[in-house]
Image (cartoon, rainbow, N blue to C red; front, side, top):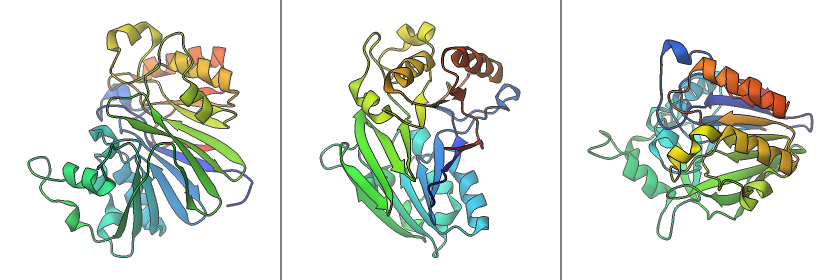
Length: 276
């Protein structure tokens, strides 16, 4: 990858539950899954219901080397994994990473727990790909691909969730998918992840007006994302983890209001490609 920039593709931007209706056509209804290309590797952040669409397209493109970094193991962030076409192909090299689990927790254990009866008919033993499960701890610095560095941190989310600061090709991308803020207090962990970022992906499940009703649910607001982006000196912020029932019209309104406060703000859309 040259220093000319990077591209992200949003395969899923919805939170909590996939949805499909006439009011969700523009922004989409797939749950969280974001692709980053770097060299020959394809790096995903989360494996929500958008991952199967990515798998089909990338396999046809000839891609065979994949990494999946999980922010955490809640269903909306992992539900696409069993339907990821490349995992059933022997030619595939797939490395899965997680760092939110407590003592004794492993990536392999998380996947096996998800893919078991009575929740799923088969387990990960049906995978045909060359699969490697990697564990880390939030706070570790990772270098999964030459020339790419990831700083990790634990976010404020029930059961834990990892935030990623990705540094590559002279660019900085912050992945803050699931986090709850304390009103009136800037989260120092999130600020460090976002500091000077070219692009921030931020959990905007709620609005400030809704927030008091949903304290302890583990999510934030688009307004808090704007406040943090300004404080961190970030260039752009993409709102992700849209509330399940948030309509296209409502998201367009949020985007317009946010851009008055911070011109680099936008609501991410499923299948959208963004240059960084």
